[in-house]
Length: 63
Image (tube, rainbow, N blue to C red; front, side, top):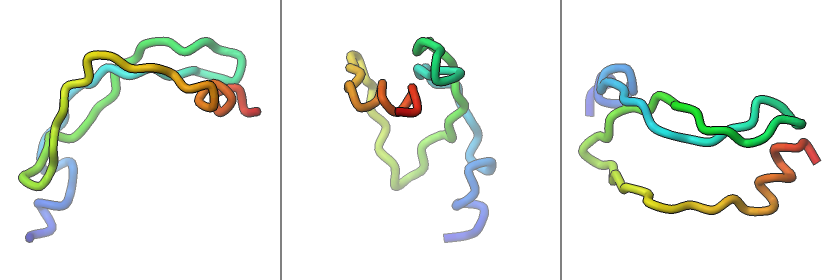
Protein backbone atom coordinates (compact mmCIF):
# COMPACT_ATOMS: atom_id res chain seq x y z
CA UNK A 1 0.00 0.00 0.00
CA UNK A 2 1.45 3.36 -0.98
CA UNK A 3 1.47 6.47 1.22
CA UNK A 4 -0.94 8.15 -1.24
CA UNK A 5 -3.53 5.45 -0.49
CA UNK A 6 -3.36 6.23 3.25
CA UNK A 7 -3.82 10.01 3.04
CA UNK A 8 -7.49 11.13 3.08
CA UNK A 9 -6.76 14.12 0.85
CA UNK A 10 -5.66 11.77 -1.93
CA UNK A 11 -9.13 10.16 -2.08
CA UNK A 12 -11.33 13.25 -2.24
CA UNK A 13 -13.99 14.49 0.14
CA UNK A 14 -17.76 14.59 0.31
CA UNK A 15 -20.20 16.44 2.56
CA UNK A 16 -22.09 14.42 5.19
CA UNK A 17 -24.93 15.49 7.47
CA UNK A 18 -24.23 15.55 11.23
CA UNK A 19 -25.45 17.13 14.46
CA UNK A 20 -23.28 19.24 16.76
CA UNK A 21 -23.48 21.78 19.55
CA UNK A 22 -21.43 24.97 19.25
CA UNK A 23 -21.00 25.13 23.03
CA UNK A 24 -22.11 23.64 26.36
CA UNK A 25 -25.25 25.80 26.44
CA UNK A 26 -26.08 25.46 22.73
CA UNK A 27 -28.66 23.01 21.40
CA UNK A 28 -27.73 20.26 18.99
CA UNK A 29 -28.19 21.50 15.45
CA UNK A 30 -27.68 20.01 11.97
CA UNK A 31 -24.36 20.75 10.26
CA UNK A 32 -22.39 19.45 7.27
CA UNK A 33 -18.98 17.87 7.78
CA UNK A 34 -16.33 16.83 5.26
CA UNK A 35 -15.61 13.12 5.07
CA UNK A 36 -13.09 11.29 2.93
CA UNK A 37 -14.41 9.05 0.21
CA UNK A 38 -14.46 5.37 1.18
CA UNK A 39 -11.43 3.34 0.23
CA UNK A 40 -11.29 -0.25 -0.98
CA UNK A 41 -11.17 -1.60 2.60
CA UNK A 42 -13.98 0.62 3.95
CA UNK A 43 -17.69 -0.07 4.33
CA UNK A 44 -20.18 2.73 3.66
CA UNK A 45 -23.66 2.51 5.16
CA UNK A 46 -26.71 4.71 4.84
CA UNK A 47 -28.17 5.71 8.21
CA UNK A 48 -31.90 6.33 7.96
CA UNK A 49 -32.68 6.94 11.66
CA UNK A 50 -30.63 7.78 14.72
CA UNK A 51 -31.06 8.56 18.39
CA UNK A 52 -29.21 10.71 20.86
CA UNK A 53 -28.13 8.96 24.03
CA UNK A 54 -28.50 10.75 27.38
CA UNK A 55 -24.73 10.42 27.92
CA UNK A 56 -24.20 12.31 24.62
CA UNK A 57 -26.13 15.24 26.09
CA UNK A 58 -23.96 15.18 29.23
CA UNK A 59 -20.85 15.27 27.02
CA UNK A 60 -22.20 18.23 25.01
CA UNK A 61 -22.94 20.11 28.23
CA UNK A 62 -19.44 19.42 29.64
CA UNK A 63 -20.96 17.59 32.63
